Image (cartoon, rainbow, N blue to C red; front, top):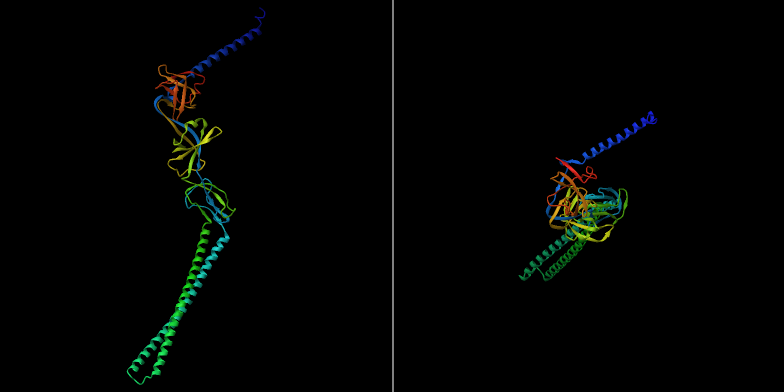
Length: 416
């Protein structure tokens, strides 16, 4: 009794009572709060309705844009890189200048060739004028010889007529002398003609020689011009630069590899497909390729027989070749592997794991509740998933992420 009456003991008992009462009140408050958290507003949820119909199964995979083959770019001349006008990954058009090579000796050769041709043209003109002058001189000699022949012939004809008429003023000796003069003049004329003919042949040969020399020098000049122009290394096809191996100031040799280029019509997509889906893939299957907000169509053209880690390489050819894609661009793709008829499906839920049993909330309209139900799912497409068991046609399933609100709950009330 003394102990009960002890003030210290009474104070200790009071403290114990307060602590126990506080714990009970906190537990009741927490229970109340937790119970209130098991209801959600319908407007905050996204529902998907089960439907029955045709269902296309897609195999999803990531991949990259790859070249089928590359066009090599080689240096046409040796020299020093003076300017680089492109870069790896750049889209280029036919005729674009990729880089400029500086070759001082080649430019000097071009200047010398131009001067040599100019000098040759001047010398050839002088030679032609000299040949024309000689030909004119030989023609003049022919004309003089011809005149002498004609005069001697006229004189001989006149004297012959006088002799025939019995004119004693012309003796036979004088007639013979005139005949001899005519023969000499005719011989000189023929000789002059032969000399002129021989000179014309010689002139023609010399002119042909000059023409050939001129063609040779012009060809050499043209070749040097082409070589100098080739120092501006130009692109031959529309495409994408894979790589350029040189920088400004570096020395390069003739026929040395500058880089590689992929033409726009020479690319395809290589996907990394899960080895578990290999049995679903076959040649020719339609494929939808997504790159950013753009979509392209293609088809399966090759399936690698080699498994690399847990994937296989599947090659997709574009149906319409794009012209704006770069090598090694990442892509998402959906390969349509199978179409089923009369299949029950739902929209693809948040954080779906296909070909497994998933726990999803199903709306019970009568009770205005969400009830957690195990649903067996099959293959999935981009937007829908096959339902193998656990749902009936017309039932509504929660598509939005409710994990944070429904943690560790199997039922929840739905408020309007």
